Image (cartoon, rainbow, N blue to C red; front, side, top):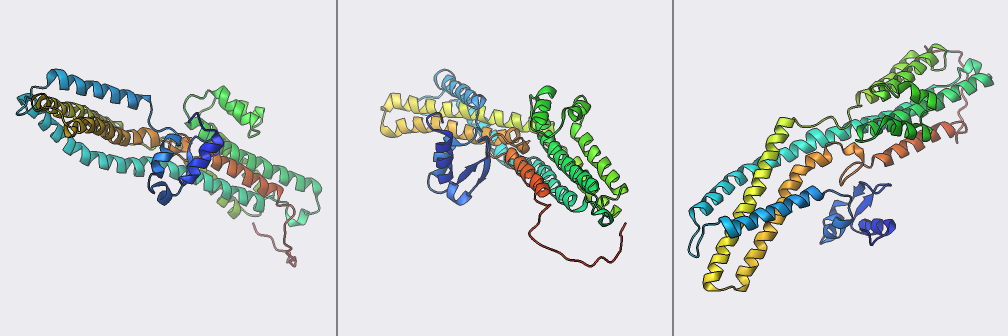
Length: 380
């Protein structure tokens, strides 16, 4: 809301149990018990990231127009009973409503399981494997004990660690940037180079290629293999573990792709649109009957209240049914880090970057000592 600053907005949402992401475009987490308590959900509603849009409101206005058209022009009821057309409208609405209530529940279930959590799972794979590979890199990429006094070799190992960690974060960020709509290659490159994730030469190499992050993973695979061949990684078993982390991240590069078949979505869309349209006509018929009886018997509080409730009923049911339909569009790519309920992607990526960089910088001086007798053994 424009009347509240960003800090005030965050404070009010925290009071209702909701914590926003760093950029304020998505929800970081929330306390369901607190959020659902009393009227906290209503207080939070206007302050949460966008879910409903102008198209939703425009459709409601159109439905109100259809309702008024049927109420004043098309209805054939009189003060005693519904006309033939009105009865047919009620019959049609009951038919479509019975089907849509059942099928829409299954649709929402599939959206959550096959789309939302499937996409979150691949994000979690990249997040977890990025941290795992970073730890393995810091622990395993080092100078062999026999050359521990070689300063140049130590510097090489340190540079290799830093480069691999930088590429891990670069690929993570690149996956996110390429999954978002509307960004040109130039804009992506500016963020990658400007954020010190890639140097200009590296970006120029992949700028015109498909699946750019796959090439970054290939670079890491090449470097790890070379490090092992030169003795900077202790064994090929360790290399295998590191390559497995790389391949898992590469295979998770499907952000925004897991979705429901378009034919299924198309049928559900037709059904919901017909449902809300018939609801508007049905409520127009009911309102027409109230007006007819009121013209004959006079208006009273109950009849006025019925008219108000019919309009509120249309608005609320439109919000529910169209909102449940919109879940697919809003949640098909939760990794985008926008809209209500999406993952705070930037928070996670900044966290990974901070942790992985400190794994390298803080690993030289450790708060423990380990004195081991050199047994002269090597493992390859």
